[in-house]
Length: 260
Ligand code: MG
Ligand code: MG
Image (cartoon, rainbow, N blue to C red; front, side, top):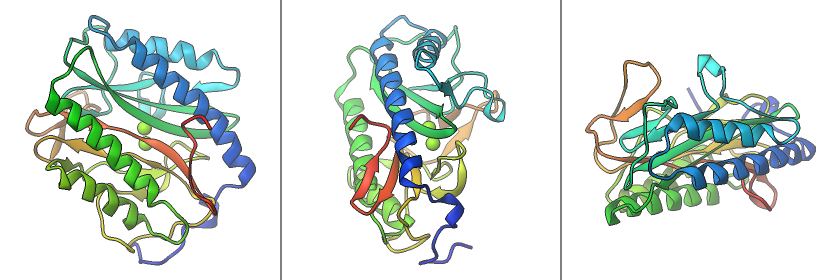
């Protein structure tokens, strides 16, 4: 049971030096996602996109893909198209088409520290409702990050995300959540994308977390495909996912997976 007001264990709190290392890895991660987004054009397969990302990432000395082999995942990136929510396995058979949306989720290990970030990008030209899904999901992430200030609680992040998403008539996925990150790709603290203000662990300075709303056009419910990885919406309608790794600092949230 998570008691409101309790502080996360000190073992999750990173020093300023460790946070700076994460920011250096996070800058490589950001550049990797930008390179993959630029390559996400009609006709490319998700396996080719993954290979481009992995080669770009490894071209930076000291940087490695964190997801490859993690729990047995076979690729550097999770690449999820349209109704796929997260954890799509890159495939030569999966070809991006004009009007699709593609979520790209990558983890980086750099100098022993981990960062995690995701974007969802349009392939060619998407319709208006799809663009609105992307805009709202990104805005929900921004709202969640803005709530990640010292002495707020994990529930404040989820409440902020949920308010944006549901205010626009979309649905927040419950089965999958954000998480603490840093010494490992996933650390023992969950950051749900829904919740109530002032509930859950207190946000202490030095906490580093991945905030990652998954937003569905239709039902919030999901199911997992036979490959045991790919999570899809239960109704087949589209889903978007944006994620940043942030640090809680005395000056407010510091986004580590974005330059500056
Ligand atoms: Mg991720
Ligand atoms: Mg994550």
